[in-house]
Length: 200
Image 1 (cartoon, rainbow, N blue to C red):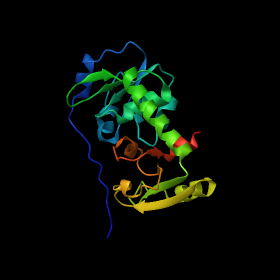
Image 2: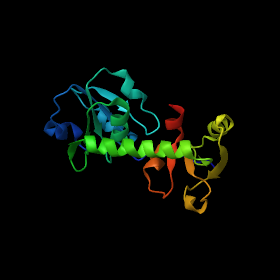
Image 3: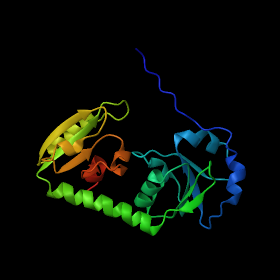
């Protein structure tokens, strides 16, 4: 059986007209997700960086600007931008037309959560490494490579749905190699993305 993935894309949002309400003093570049990429590419008079993923923000390195405007929904992607660039990040929801800026408080909460997870990892004597079987999120080779280098007692958990982690109380910290957005979910256990450990 062949599996075909069709991205859900938003159309006819009239973003060009809606952005007239947006006022940003700094020079900025626009980033978005795949759902809005086609619509954003139609914009005239703006610098477009392109698509941003939770696990890949390479587009932000191609432009020398002072701020970012994220067009899309939710805070996950703009928070990552703010965390990685330390520059002002504005958000615009093309559906609700809500315009806002990632605040210092929001960034601090995000950073504290990251730091708390890192501390739990450093103090853990037994860790679990999460590997997803979903296409595009499967990083088994990367997980095995990390396990070989890691000096802690570790186990690899391969699953399609990441849940019920609290059933393994002896695992003191979980290392996520799947979608980085899992870090944002409240799974009731200490969890950190592998890339955050690798950067250190």
